[in-house]
Length: 156
Image (cartoon, rainbow, N blue to C red; front, side, top):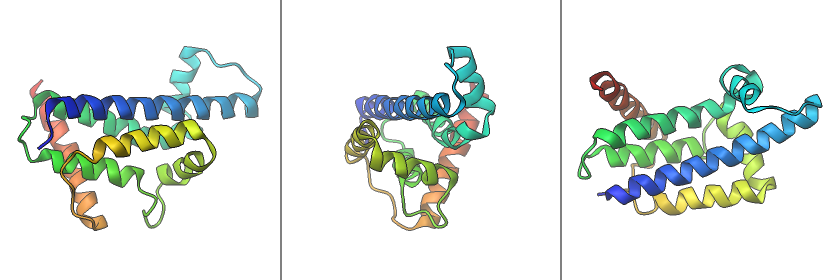
């Protein structure tokens, strides 16, 4: 099972991926709209603007992982669900491609910083227990992770 340090490494890798995607999306938005966004404006766009909506799936997954990590034991079977949830979100095999995948994969292919951050997440995930490979199982594991996170958040 995943060690406590694996949780932190995964959290760090996902945060770096998220930061890189936000920076890239922000830059494109600023060029398209001829604006220079301040931190408050960026936060508002991240939470409410349709052009940034595709990032919310990753943001929500990161929150769920933080909640589960705080309460899950290292030998908890939730680690398989964690890997499944992350791999499903980052998968380019979603059919039809989800909102995240439609925007994410072009960035992976054209921006070396995004590709490096993606590779770092995949490298960290390699140490986690492998999930079942079929899509329905991946979706079920993501749902299970989200439900566990919600349950734990209520206990907090």
